Figure 1: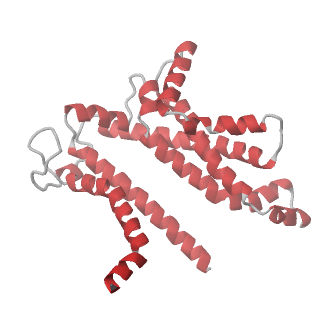
Figure 2: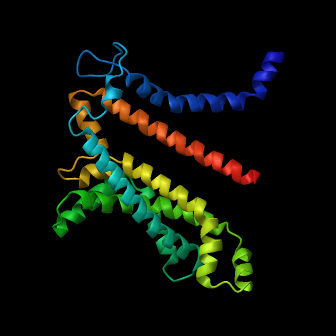
Figure 3: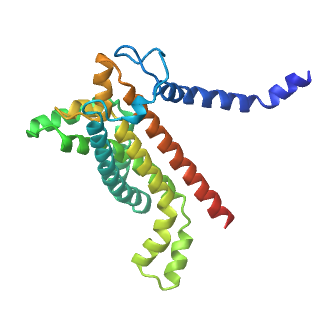
Length: 264
């Protein structure tokens, strides 16, 4: 009976740990198979331990080139979506205008509709305009796709802000620019950072929209998809493990910084 009561009290903990394990298991498999040395082209069965792929992660042709291209597109898409999304979020949260309900609805359309619909629509637009598919079409498509997520994150943060803080700064003779830079922007910074990080992850990981609007340009997700048809190199697991480790380190660094800020 005691064991049953203990299990019931900690049932939520067990459910959380099970869900976490379910989410992390694919990353563990990728980590393990990054040290594999397959006999053939397919890295689907464990053969023997090897660190050759870690010693030469760019040993596969065009792998690092596609990776650098994806990072470049993700960086610029993050900057563009964050700047535009922050301005839209402030406009929707702080100002009232006739088209506000319509803009609110349109902003959430990219999040609600399937990616393949948006990808096909953008491809049709670029074709009708006679635009050559490549880096710029991918970048424009990614900015449009990530914009909604930035607006959602920043708008939620702005709407939760206490307007009395800005009013107090104005009572202390702060100019509108000083109030924005020293009061409004620091308070909204967590929402802006969350939107930027989400944009970077979505842009770097996107395949459907990129595939429709890339032309002959090959990003890292498209390289992985193409390689899976011929045989998955171990180096892909190496890059995936490295990206996962970097993401975890960034989250831990953010948590540590937040903990130190609270203590101080």
